[in-house]
Length: 139
Image (cartoon, rainbow, N blue to C red; front, side, top):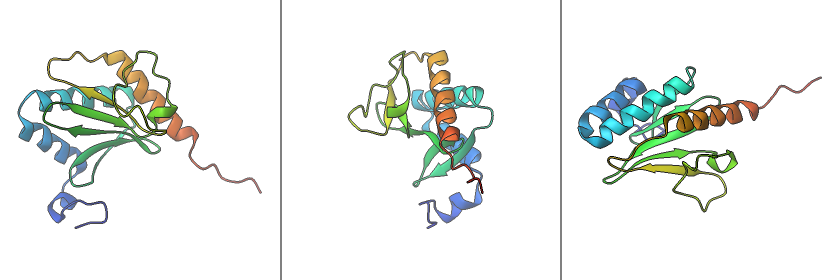
């Protein structure tokens, strides 16, 4: 088992390939929803890096984690690592609202996704990550 919780087989595969496989193995509305939000994330941030962590969780990063894409029986959950620090004028965050750091969006079957609002959140999360990266100290 690798340090990040991936199995040896998962270590040999590319994260994007593992996400593709997850979408295929779900084979229902959750796979379709995960594929749709993945496409939106990639549209919003062409520099996004796909990762596979914690024994099977798709993660999208740019300067740090933007969000994770977990699938459960009744929801696809997008958890934004620094969601509490993001403006959410469209009110997409509907889960994990009590914490000081993360915020999540639970998407249920047949629920419409506000695509433009989601892309704006992704861009804001990436911008926040990049703005908080350690800057070199001036001599």
